[in-house]
Structures are given as C-alpha cells and as structure tokens.
Amino acid sequence: MKLLRKRAQQTSESVWLAMVLACSGGLMDAYSFLGRDKVFANAQTGNLLLLGINISEGAWQNVPHYLCPVLCFALGCAIAHQIRLHEGHGIHWRQTVVIVEAILLAAVSFMPSSINLVANSLTSLACGMQVQAFRKLHGRPFATTMCIGNLRSGTAALVNYTHEGKRRDLRSAFLYYLIILTFVLGAILGNTLLGAFSLHAIAASCVFLLVAFVLMFEDREHRKEIKEEEKIEEEAEEAIEELRELEAEQASTADATSATTANTGEKN
Image 1 (cartoon, rainbow, N blue to C red):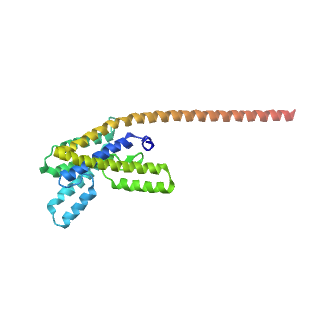
Image 2: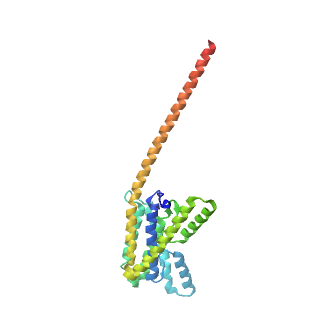
Image 3: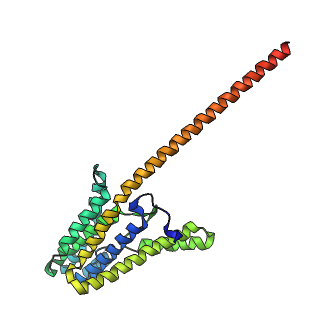
C-alpha cells in the first residue's frame, strides 16, 4: 500500500515499530485495569479522575492505588529523558529504554495480586519511559500508549484532506487511525492472555519490546546510509559550484579578450 511505503527518517519513527509499541501499550492498559485492581497503566487521566472521586468520597485507603501509578509514570518520563541526555556510544538510547521496560514488566509478571500497588506502579513507570522515548511517527507527534492525541490529530488531518485534497493529510489520518486500531488489538490480546495466563500475561509485552529492540538496529544502519547520501550530495553540489565558478571565470576571460580585441581594432 502506497500509504505505508514512505520510509521514516529513523526506525524510531517507523510505522512497524509504532505498531509493535502501540500493541504493547494496549496490552499493558488492559492488563493493569482488568488484572490489577482497575488501575490504568497508561491512561493517567483516568487514574487522576478515580483519585479525585475516591478523595471526594473519603475513601483515603484507595488514594495510593491511583496516585502512585501517576507519580511513577512521571518518574518514567524523567528517567527516559535522563537516559537520552547521558547517551553513550553503545546502543541507541531508545534501545536502552525498551530493555529497561522489558525488565520491569518481566518482574511484574511474577508479582502476586497481594502487591498490585507495586505491580501497577512499575507498569506505569515503564509506560512513562515509552511515552517519553517514542513521540514521533514519520515526523508527526503521536503516542504509543494512549489514543486521545492520535484521535485528535488523525481527525484533524482527515478534515484537512476533505478541504484541500492533499494526500499528505490522508496519509497522516491513515497512520494515526492505524496506530489506534493496533492499540485496540493490543487490548484485545491482553484480555485474552489474562484469561489464559493470569497475571503472567504481561510477559507478552516483553516480547513486543524485544521485537522493538531488534527493529531499532536498522536505525543505525539507515542513519549511516543517510550520512553517505548526504556526503555524496555535498560533493556533487561542490563540484557543480566549482564548475559554475569555472564557467564564470571563462566567460569573464572571454569578455576581457573581446574587449581588448575591440579596443585594438579601434586604435588601428
């Protein structure tokens, strides 16, 4: 399909990686809400809403269940940003993020229901890291762990297409709705796996994250290709510029020669 053929500038912005991460995001939300005391791993707006409701009802014993995941989500964003700021010369910083996520979720898969608060907090920590690390799809802002921003952007792009008829807007709408659909499929998968594997179901997200880790190795190779192409283009531009300067110099010499010849003829 033509809408999927355009290559992203980095693999971290590619459609396939976005779909893998969105599927994992939907799975995490379904897992935490259905399997871990009705708490959202990604949708912190929902957690804040439930936090406010419980406070208004005086159910203070439930406050930590919703407050801790929110705080851990914010902490995850901060950790991912710190990883980016301190990136070394080894693997890409986003690969470090997904490996840390996978380790956290693997630990969650072995936690009993008696410590759901810890499990939900660690899951939200992983989600916060993912949100911070993956924020673009083909240069467009998007999210792999929530849908409201994608729904708004996709709908706006679709309306723009109906007004202006630009395929770029249709492509944007398609990509945003595709990621939303993948998120929903992840939620369906999460619910199905919960029925089959109970609290160990979150381990499926670890598999998705490992796939994402492998996909991002292409990023480094692609960036090398881009640099080589840019170098060739720069050399070509320099050669063209030198040729133009040479032509200008030759034209100037020819004009000077013509002028000298004309002056000589007038004197004679």
